[in-house]
Length: 188
Image (cartoon, rainbow, N blue to C red):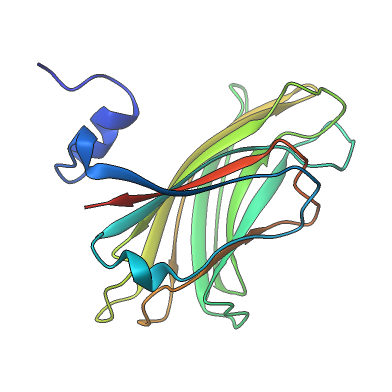
């Protein structure tokens, strides 16, 4: 049977990951607005080579615009992150890169505004999260709709530290709205 198009095909092409290699480790579904979502004690997932976060979310800002997702590892607030992204809305493309940052940033993936049913979505791969002989790298695909904004974003980055990742904090310059969902998967 051929690999289906979509996420599994992309994952399979990127390293031979089979569909049954993804295990759901934990899920957080917000029932109130929350500023930061944290996955901790990740050292207990040593049976996995990579981690993946799948999230559907919106902010509680009330304005019809798109916002970014920020991420830190092990509560590290130093200038130890680098990232670059490509973002587009069907008409305009933009790209940027940054070094010596205090967090990873994933752009234009959070839906905002008064539309109760519109959520942004993102899939973030955290590669070799427990390997202590190299820096940890991430890649993401996300997008959202807010008012007249409709964007999709590809991003990647690195945490310039060889420590094993034991916690992941996801935040932004807003609160995540009730109903937002964050799931952590392990990849063997």
